[in-house]
Amino acid sequence: MSLVRLNIKGISYSQTQNGAYALILNEVDGDRKLPIVIGAFEAQSIAIALEKEIRPPRPLTHDLFKNFADRFDIVVKQVIIHKLVDGVFYSSLICERDKIEEIIDARTSDAIALALRFKAPIFTYKNILDKAGIYLKVNPKKESEEQDSILVDDMVVEEIEASIQDNYSDKSLEELNVLLDEAVNNEDYEKAAKIRDEISKR
Image 1 (spheres, rainbow, N blue to C red):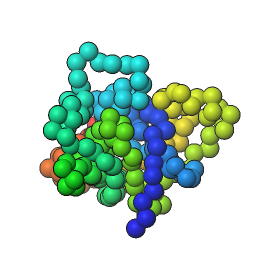
Image 2: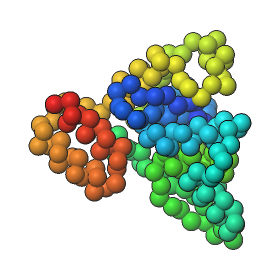
Image 3: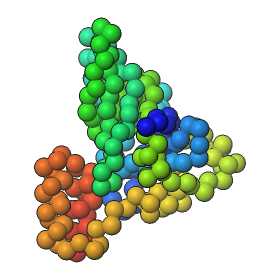
Image 4: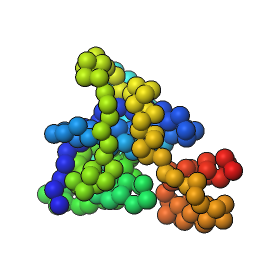
């Protein structure tokens, strides 16, 4: 399976999910975008890493991990988004210490926050991009003007939300509660939040 390199396009606030953000990754040699729903803390951590001028007075969790890794000569070489199941992305950190490579499982939002701090490239497999990648109709002039902004245009947000919204409307309350328990047991809190929102709507 061939790997596709991704860059970070920006972050948008989710209109439909309280406290959630959409992280938009851009295909390096193409026009597809990969939108990923992340939590507020991870969005803040990624935004701080993107904005070079912002330096928190005390290290955030991802900064602490970076300091710890630096102290023990551990390098994150790359991040691979390797699996997509029920709208949830799974990622791995490819780390190296003393020329020995290790693969560590990570939430995608944490993996990307760390990739930024280690200046490590982000990849996904072509089949994942084929399945979840979307084309956004963005005005090229406007895009070049907003190149320095990490926040994404509202119309783009609506388009992203339409493409990543999991459809739980056809599920009964009983089925939703079972799915919620499964998501919590799997520590898939992003999915659990979506299901909880759907239950609240009922």
